[in-house]
Image 1 (cartoon, helix red, strand yellow):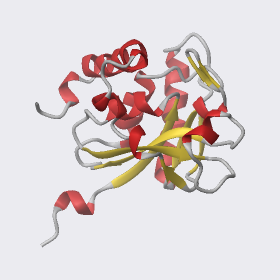
Image 2: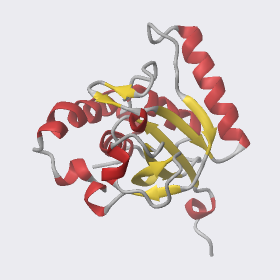
Image 3: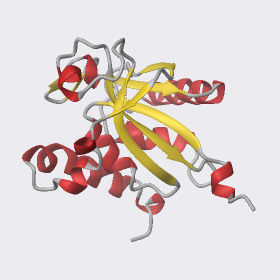
Length: 185
């Protein structure tokens, strides 16, 4: 017998600054099965963190999310993503500057393309941010998982200064805004 959740798993690949922030925040949502930090969108095969940090590879720091759209639909997942980063700054999030920190949605289907563009249009029309959204919407390229030390970074390094100053507040913001959509416990 097939498990219903296995038959409805979808993938989302999102970049919005440091992948530690996205991973730590989005993994809290009910319906999210896994979040893997990695790299996508560049020209170098199997890049590593040091190469990405130069900004020369063209890759973005991203997370690849496996989720159950019956429990959390793609639009809600994207809304959470937009809640925890600034989609109006090109190639930067706070003090993290470079193309590797760009705001990007790598889509895995025509439906994801349509939903992403519609949500961006809705947010721009509602003037949620003082500037227009510059988030790129592109077809999903090859995803390269980051090194093991970058997986679940916040959970493993909560006292690290960057985690306390940058990751922690984003996790807290998601917990506040999506309080009714969090995993139990």
